[in-house]
Image (cartoon, rainbow, N blue to C red; front, top):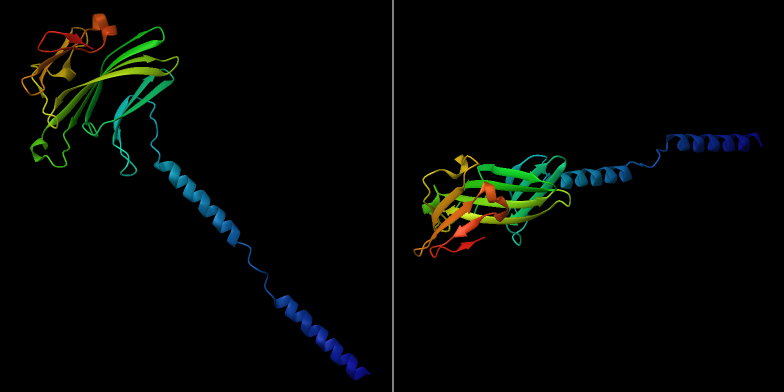
Amino acid sequence: MTKYRFIIVALFAFSFAQAQTKKPAPKAAAKTGTAQVKKDSTATAKEEPEIRNEFAVYSKMPKDKKERIKLCINLVEGETILNYCVNDSICRSPEVSKILWQKTQGDTTYVLVYIDAFSKPVDKPACDAGHETKLYFARWNTKTNKAVWKSRLVSSCMRGIENMSKEAVNEWDGTSQLGINYYKGNSKFVTLLFSPENYKLGLQIIGDEGKINE
């Protein structure tokens, strides 16, 4: 009887020792997966362009071949920010941008923006040293944060538009009438006018026939 009792005690001790040395199942796998998802979400957020709290003009490059390059203008009035983007591959990544003139009347701000970029041709080597110059005029309601825009391309190697004005547009004094003469090809001469005294008329165009068009 004592012999059998010794065997039972020995088996019990062996089973207890095995239970003590058995390792618990790992539990860290699920946490690793969650951490990876958070990291990926942060990286995606950083890819989105940040709207700046200052005047800026920049190009927004497409994410895929179906989209087009956009030219964006950022206007700031107090705490109100207006970010306007339009399809434009001509004035790509402009080197020079400037607010030529600005006036606020009540809830409306009128802004004249000058944009100039070196031509960046893909298949037109003759324009490697050319320029692309645009003027944008905005009538911006800062209360509703909506604006009406007008633009004119006054110089472009890519489009064959030649600025024939003697004075540089970006050196305009902002008080006298701004006049830009340019040639659009096919014997077509055009004059663009902007008058600070009659700013609500915006950008006006006088063609060869002397007719004024906005």
